[in-house]
Figure 1: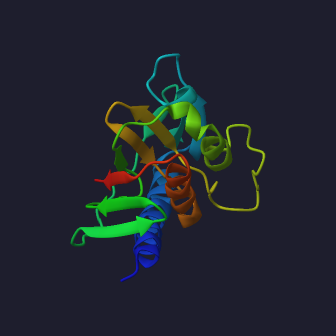
Figure 2: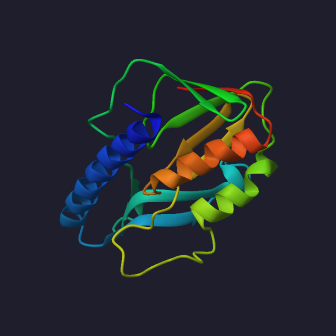
Figure 3: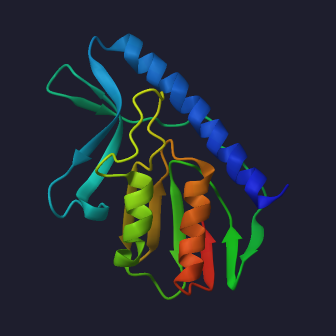
Length: 175
């Protein structure tokens, strides 16, 4: 299986579960909404303190409910080369991607990627689509990157990897 096919398989499996989750939450709560963007308190640890909750139930002053996927695509670790960057891919779960970057990374270098795929100002918001197509969160710390790709398309991950390669990252591990 090609790496691009693996990305699509993982993304499609997650979004299918997310769709079922939203249907269940909508039925279970009189009021609420899926994919609600929140600006958290400074120092939350999230990139720009922004977060997209999977679902917020309207009762009880808003209750954040997150999807815990029941299924995960499993595979033997694979090695992938992207330009000058070598990747060891050990695990790929759409809502919980962890990328260790040899030598670390400055989160400010991800500003354009985040602006595009989180879309904090909702410049690409389309009221006629069921889901936003956006990333739900990003954390950059000493361990690397932690990303919940939410309902973003496969291109969001491909673009993130290309961004890392453009930044001169030569060795990353996805766990």
